[in-house]
Length: 253
Image 1 (tube, rainbow, N blue to C red):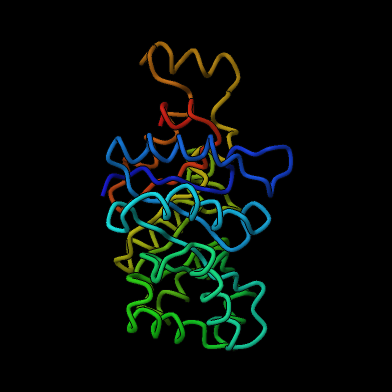
Image 2: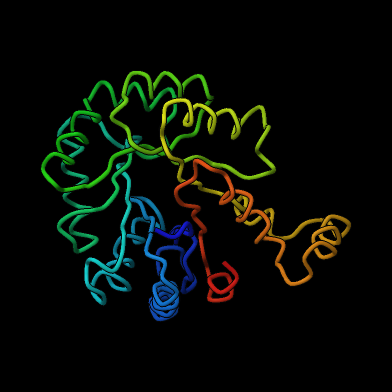
């Protein structure tokens, strides 16, 4: 699988964030697949809950199932009881128009939501979904300290992948702890899916004196591409997500 993943939390919109511009999105999907990329990342909450529906229209309804990879996430921060896990999952399959997903994650895990996940046995439910063939892989997206991540992976080695906020700006950040979290994943033998490689677009436009350094090194490369390439160059990285909003970003990536 090629390392670039299509993140669907910043899709082209028609005014309101919940109104995805499907015509433009379809063209972006077509171009992405045309170049041999397959990985699409969505969630229950992106675009006011409409990201999964948009992916059904632009991708699932238009291509054979073996042409693409879908990952979506359980909103563990919205779960109150164990039955909610299956309820959300069934709704997500309906939204996506598919009978299975390739990757299913616990979304935005931190110390607090980890306690929720344990209380409702979300880990057991994910293992069951995998055993039933409803998802092929299970994991979590993570927003907390390396120590918390180490504890989770120690207690739940069945988690196959971790999605981390990782970029060169946050690499040694004391709050994000990108490098330390990456090293915890390597220690546990888990591959990393990278989110926010361009830090929500912040690394696409830098102060002029910094951009000049990049231009002197490689005049033809965009500033954003350096951030994507940094993340993709790391040995333990499976996929680098980019939340693409227009065709220009697709082409650049």
